[in-house]
Image 1 (cartoon, rainbow, N blue to C red):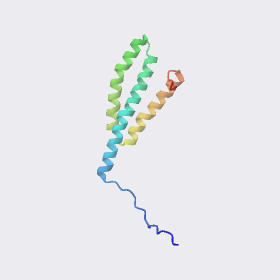
Image 2 (tube, rainbow, N blue to C red):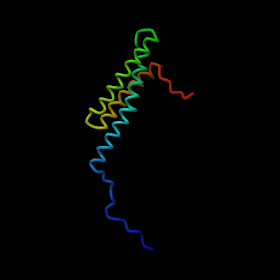
Image 3 (cartoon, rainbow, N blue to C red):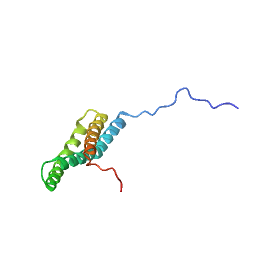
Image 4 (cartoon, rainbow, N blue to C red):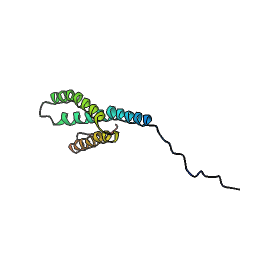
Length: 112
């Protein structure tokens, strides 16, 4: 019995320039929607617990600022040079803010 012939070159998936562009825009859109929301939510949480005013006023101020933060995040995602830079530019500050919130005891990871 003979082994099946293996082609000398395995065909690679090659995307057209238009497909690469569309994937980049799709990736940036997901980064803007999800990453921007995550960053805005974490900054809102940080401001809510750290602003030196009454709790209700701090939450309201942080919530109002979150709209501007989210808008700036979306604008920044589409202004960067690459989708990778957009993702990193949102996720790295989000991770830093989450670590700060965790060290303050303001971030709860329980699902209950």
